[in-house]
Image (cartoon, rainbow, N blue to C red; front, side, top):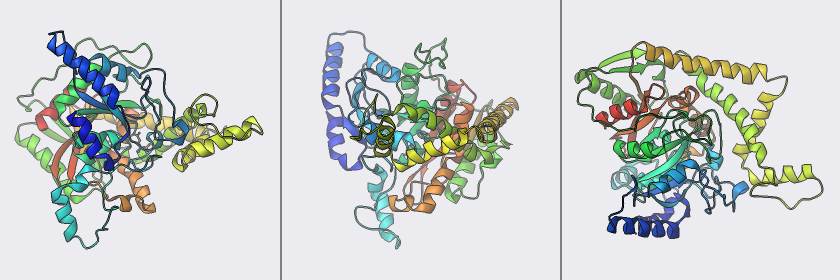
Length: 469
Ligand code: GLN
């Protein structure tokens, strides 16, 4: 009840696309009954959880924040949603995002941008008054980052205790950093993608947003494991239990030197080095490592992402799902008009780029080459870990959350693609990574750092993150 009333109070944040109040209340009633009758309880019994609106939810509209899927009600639950429900979680609703999870701001969905709850903190407001450049009025608010900004805002505003996001190039870690949350991207293959509407199949993973590492670990424990409906998932043979790390003296932390980019804010840079100093002063070994192909990662991601997008989006043809235009002069005209009306320009732009890279005459030069570069990027990580590093410590974003009006300027759009520099390579390598909130900036806004672990060493990664938290 309390979470539902907070959802209503914070409606202006635009965190939710659909609030599933009736479903949540009914589940809460059942949960209470189980508790009162002394029945065994699930790991998440009675816990309010929100889900990004690109996961299929049986009987609940699933839009991907796109005109294309407005009104689409899936007949089944994504595996992760079903697992949450099976463990007694209360489904609070479906959260806002960039259309089809393409973006880094949560500003591009058809339901409008998500506002960062930290825009309204007392400290930030006081600072803004002193800032002569501040824009006044209703537009004076910060982006959440994205594309899982609705999930981040929902947890940050206490409307739920955990939320599912998705992470293809940073979409869980980026908004977690901007909203002061733990944002966990698991190893590719640890959690089922069945029912997650695909962006880039070879990089997508469901992500987990919570306030504390322990909470993320509990949700991970519920979600992890083989799913016969996702052939890329692997079985896990032991339950995921998070132990406390007493001592970090056996740990080796790698600091990738290529991540010290000129665009990185000086405040984040200094927190990053203070964090490394902290590990060192507690006895951990901290060494500089090289990930030499880092500078290719944004371009490489772009070629692979758009190519997979071009192929994935072909299913939205006006026949099978969601939107269909009124034009009926020919099938081709119907396809074209449906897709023109259904997709925003970001999605259409990616479809065009992807089809360009996949043209017969371009395929070798772009798509195949990008796949080779992807391998080099992934090997950089393997080499770093083979040199004895247990986890890498990096920034998550270039800066703290920026005001909306600044973000939507043309030049900032380019910068926002650059903003994924610390997160995208991890997806191309399939590694686990987590954003941990570390401090508030001079402006009073959250700053996070990222830990990256070896493939399928998610538990070790979260244990280190917990020590640091
Ligand atoms: N910002 C990246 C993109 O737009 C990542 C998105 C994501 O992780 N879903 O593709």
